[in-house]
Image (cartoon, rainbow, N blue to C red; front, side, top):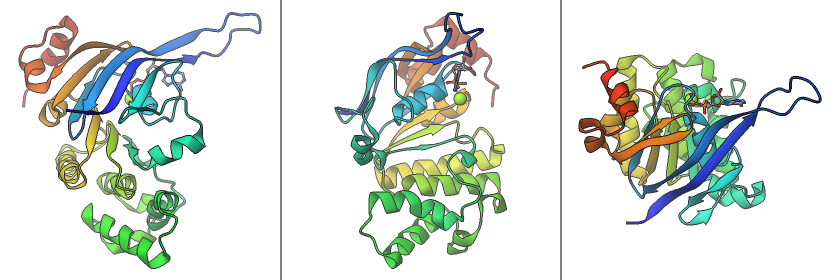
Length: 262
Ligand SMILES: Nc1ncnc2c1ncn2[C@@H]1O[C@H](COP(=O)(O)OP(=O)(O)O)[C@@H](O)[C@H]1O
Ligand SMILES: [Mg+2]
């Protein structure tokens, strides 16, 4: 088996505001020495309480942030620390969706134009009619119609907006999708619809998935492997069923004990 994603000794910290000009600069160490791999076609779940560094990791994986130390490799090639021009070929292959779809959808842009944007960059040769066909097909695939194209994000429900964000993420046919709490802001009934849509699309597009959530029930249901994070570090890692039925780390046991029973 080959890895689509390799993470090697990743470190990332954020500077805190200085107390005064002579004060020593202080940092928050958000990610500290993470290493793991994701096999092609698999789903890696990442759990951990708020502030454990999950979103920082997500941004490092899609090269929205540059680590202070360590590497992210996509199919064996280092992508962390590359200049934007050299990152471009990877951008279409690695996409991200967020908890709040407003993170990826410009509220002032019509849906059609939002989805067209990454497509224009990835496939500049596509003509207007071809681009339109691709967008309509993608909108239909996520359960929305052509009518969505001319509308704005605020005219949709949270679940519909997440469908649009998924359409935008998948329009360039990426191979890796990083989903950071993609259903955490949605009603439970809508959560199941979006998760099932993601699973269908994963098969259809041959995606590998990093699925980040503080909801252990969802992660258990979806993931092949799971990583438990605390204070920017891996506390425990394993196959999903084994990890949830026989957790080794005390911290994992505590998280599982706090899970609501279905
Ligand atoms: N842009 C930022 N500037 C400063 N500190 C940040 C920033 N983003 C996150 N942090 C801090 O880094 C740590 C990890 O945050 P985050 O990656 O958002 O965790 P999670 O997604 O697990 O809640 C937290 O202590 C958070 O306050
Ligand atoms: Mg987060």
